[in-house]
Length: 134
Image (cartoon, rainbow, N blue to C red; front, side, top):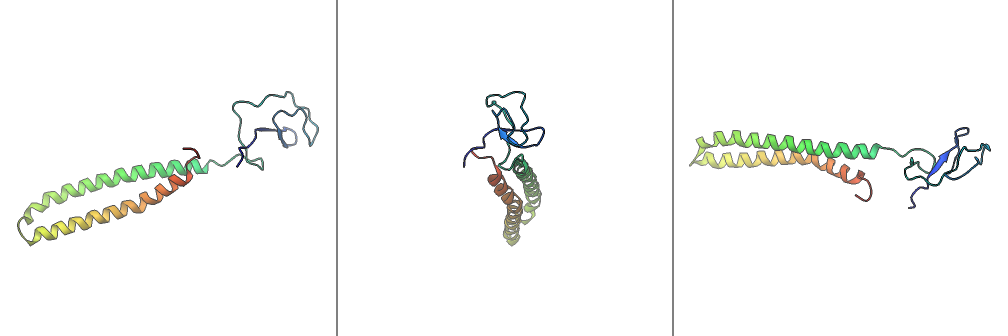
């Protein structure tokens, strides 16, 4: 795919034309100046509209949503492990220790599944909407 060529828009008829044109092809308006292709220009799509910034916003939301969710889940996991560790001592040396260990493993597995249910789609959106070449 070719990169879009920079162009200007006639202020009278809104017709896009090449950047170094001296006269508008549609209405005949004479431009005040003709300039070489500038270093920084606005980009437009082929039909003359500015490109959407929605993919960049979605990328930003997905990245920070996943980071925030991961930090929140890590804090919850550490809190839960701390609380479980405080109560596990009463089950030492008996069948209750095995049951408590299984319960903790199931709880951590559920926590990981809930984390992945949100962070996974955020990661997919992040990787699909990032700018090309990065």
